[in-house]
Length: 464
Image (cartoon, rainbow, N blue to C red; front, side, top):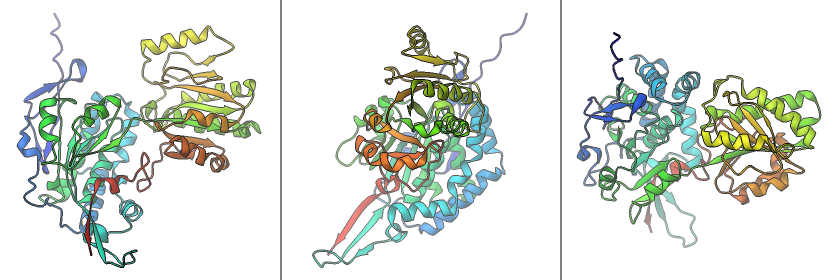
């Protein structure tokens, strides 16, 4: 008789103020996604306000040097910690292996000197306001003032839909010189701690290493969060995630404790009739659009879910067929086969198949992508490599479908952006890009409509 297979429980470590902690005291999850964590001592997760944080007075140039070394360490992976985090993520993350491999291979690029200095210059106007007090002389009153971007004390509920979010959070946190507690997300259990262990390997015992902790607790755990989310310990809560995460975070917000919300977003595409000028241009547009639709297997906020295409029904149908064929191609940022569709989404699709010619569908439930053509956006949420192509006479008429929850709009051809961007911005859109470039986020430019570094800091005045 064959012995039953031993249950697999993935062990994850915590990082407490730069020190890796191991243990299997607590078991979380169920089924194939079970994992264990060390016990948590809440007192260790806060930094006393009676003394400055470890890196409050560390020169920014020194911090940037350490971050650059950390990026190099991540890329070289001398201790195999990044490879280990990758292999464990393959077992626990919903992203396919090839997409995770690409994501982990690019983590080190978050920490380039050019990129870090670009962020400081773009968002803060230079290092002087971080390292000391910037003098403001040309004032209406004629008085001399000084301002400083003062190091914050922050909790971060980071998103788990891409390992790069953990890397960006560490980079932003280090540049602020503040103290930062990262809540590890259940769908990315290994990225944050691997990056922080790299930071500690490069700079053991350094103030910037001692300024970070990363631990897991179940989201919405009132016992944990009611203790931690207090102004006597932290200034701000940076929260990524869906509506439930943001609503859960808001209940703790009050005087002295601010929310920096990376709200849930969706993204769209707007494609002009110029694509039908030649077969080559049509094929190019379909490929670019497929890249944006399938970005991170449509798990990213920047992934396109609705596309507005100018043209006749016959022309748009030609485009839909090409788009669906390109959605089944494997790239660094997506797999050929997507996740299985939910039963609810399958029912919606089956209902639409019976409503031709008002709706037309290309593709099947095989993970290779499904395209729905309609003259109005569908009333359900396209997901799992499903995209809704809406035929329109003029892209300007489609702007009304954008709102404050629309993060990215990919436009083709690029020359059409100038005629659309003001109206899109007025509707609430935060980002307009060339079609096919939705995933090319440039750190240092506004993210979700604000400058993260600027929002993370506490801004203090010395007046007169």
